[in-house]
Image (tube, rainbow over all chains, first blue to last red; front, top):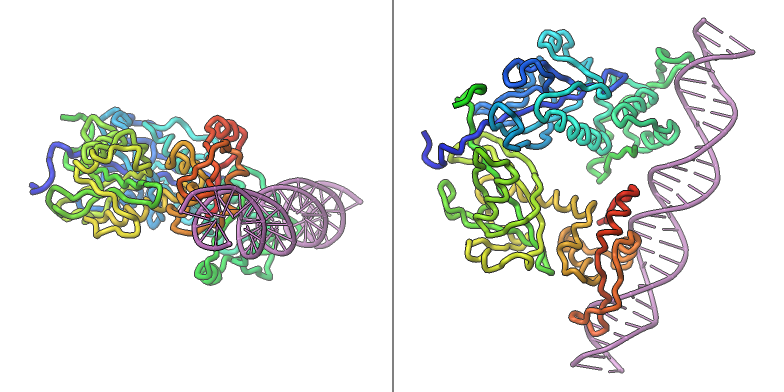
Length: 231
Length: 231
DNA sequence: GCAAAAGTGTTCGGGCTACACCCATGA
DNA sequence: TCATGGGTGTAGCCCGAACACTTTTGC
């Protein structure tokens, strides 16, 4: 079969995907009911086995799509889990991936068809194997990313209000923020264009709409700017 | 063989170790000459295959010991590399680990016997496969760790001088630091005990010796303190 | 006119940066 | 006495934290 490496050391390698979603209100985690033994019927992350002709990043994308219908999700590699007994069925090393998406951007019916479920992060059921540990680590990673990269804007409608943006950060960090300081900080980065329109759906007075300006962001990046939101 | 998972998806899994060392002067990388095809004779990180009954962290430790004689090295998992073609011999997914050690703490002869070599990080030869990429990522990780954790003190003699500590940080970040600000910052954390002795080996005046105080560190940690050195 | 959400400014303190001179000593 | 490396202090600035009242408008 192969000229170089020993055959007896081959392992079962898996990928697992930790997908967080924002639905304009709270942060949720996507879970499925595991459909194979061991642990059949338990809540689980979306996992599967890479093919021989497939990079692990691609495998994670494929597995996610097969199990939930989601595609074109930017997956970031999280960590490799390689304890001998982490899967009681067999020794499996798993590389976990994570992402944070806007739930409404993706086909909800498709997700439902696949029997995948969004659960609030404050109410996560018991998960199979060490998936809970993966979720905790993913949450930390997502929080770090949100602090240092402008991923927040991608989770809101194209035009959004300051209170909306603030709620998003509050959902991610599960922490209340001071609106004056938050607003000052965000606007001081000069990444947003203030529009003349107001959104009146959530108050009588109405809140001004803003729009993320990717060109400005690119320009600032090239000047050594670092995005940063304190929390 | 196994009741649960498909046999055909088994992969070759590897671990690779990126070991940086400090010799009281500069930062070095440990390399070996690869002793198997493909790439035999090329400079390489220390790599090998986990056994079925061995966690990947343990595998990394074992591989490192087998190839260099080093043991009791704290290895941190770095990243998993899973491109299909990263190893021209066969599809191998590799989990990389990294560490930063005090070179003199370990048996130099043993390292030499194993044909392992310390190379200055400014002068790293071509490496096999994607090992260079691993090294770059490891360097970033080590730098982050040195910024937010007091690992610096472990790389110096138990008693050390401020100039020594500063040189260490300058070696890690390849950047000159202002001694007044550096000193102020370090001492302001109150993690060091100033001793009454001086080290006269590198100057006529002599420099005061300091000692890291782990109890103080633990105490501060429990009060919500975060170690941080700006660079 | 009132309830509910939006919007806005100031003060304070801490920490980082930049910067230059004196000290101790062995040769 | 001089060369070498060690040691120290200050002023300015920026940024984050804390904090409360006014505005708008639909009901």
